[in-house]
Length: 190
Image (cartoon, rainbow, N blue to C red):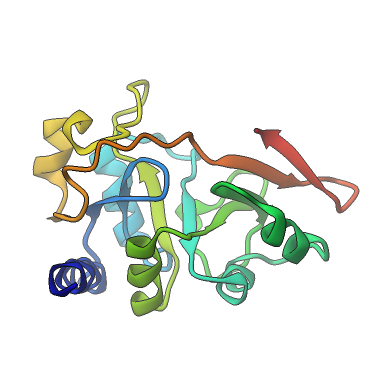
């Protein structure tokens, strides 16, 4: 348990310094930074080689934190969260609390409540949303396990988590649900 807490603390310390971390998420290995710090988001996108206008998702700890980053929270979201059986990203209208680089051209942001213990503890202790984009260059496959991460990204990240480096478990990408024009949630990717 001490190692786990040290890993959480080290990740949060790096995030508080506006650094980019490489860490295991509830789906794949990801690159992340504080979702409220525009220079950190820019640094992350430069490292990844991500083009402008292609936003990343934000991991949050709970519905209250999700509501901080969403300008509109649909009434049925709480029931949808209770029924979900795997990681699900919700595309919702973005609030002003999220860094502009995370907002899609249509004014939305992807938000996912994390259930992975490591991510949850990092987000909860940080007190802000955590950017999450797969730790790969554009066009390359997302790394499901640590050994698949591009060495250039390992060298370029300010902090690389030691947690779950030896975990070979593969998880499907998150399900994606969007708030539709009619105000109802619509599945984009199952």
